[in-house]
Amino acid sequence: VSILDKDANFINLNHKQINIMGYRSNVDILGKTYYQFKGIPTDTAEKFIVQDQRVLSKNQPLRYLSYQQYCDGNWHLLLGDKNCILDAKGQMTGIFSQAKDITSNGLIDFSRFMFEANRKYTQKISKVGFNYILANEDNVGEFSKKEMVILFYLLRGKTAREMATIISRSEKTVNFHLDIIKSKYNVSSKSAL
Image 1 (cartoon, helix red, strand yellow):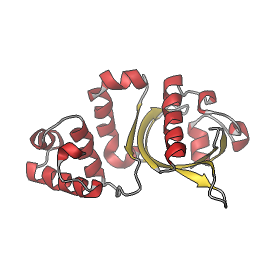
Image 2: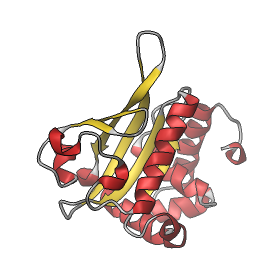
Image 3: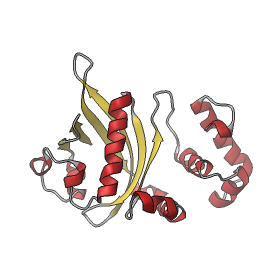
């Protein structure tokens, strides 16, 4: 969990976030920006800032998948959401972000594959990881792990048959997940995604 003011200064981090960022307490992070955190390259900080600005400008939640090496020396695969914090008058005062460390959920091998498969794209973003926006609309439903995998390959131009081969499932199973994803986005074709 992290809380930032509307100028992207950190107000609070939970204990686990403090540790992976290389600090000992909230006092150490109070008022810092992404640029000031240990071990976060400038291009990664810029990606986080763009996400925060998007949340604030649209007043809509944002879901992301991030794979980065942090100051604790470990790679962390985080699935998270960012939301606006509103005061009693409905004015935006900051951003509330919560992420789940899913590194040990069996997705770590998939995430390494994603990073390697997209190296030509991710090197432009960061030399040490990636950060994908998965959803940023209120009407988008929760995605299962399999749906996220299917969506990832779909966005990279893979056919249902190619996805089936890659993830060792039948083409029928892939199409089943594609139909669920289309229904969550309220579209009738893959190209509309």
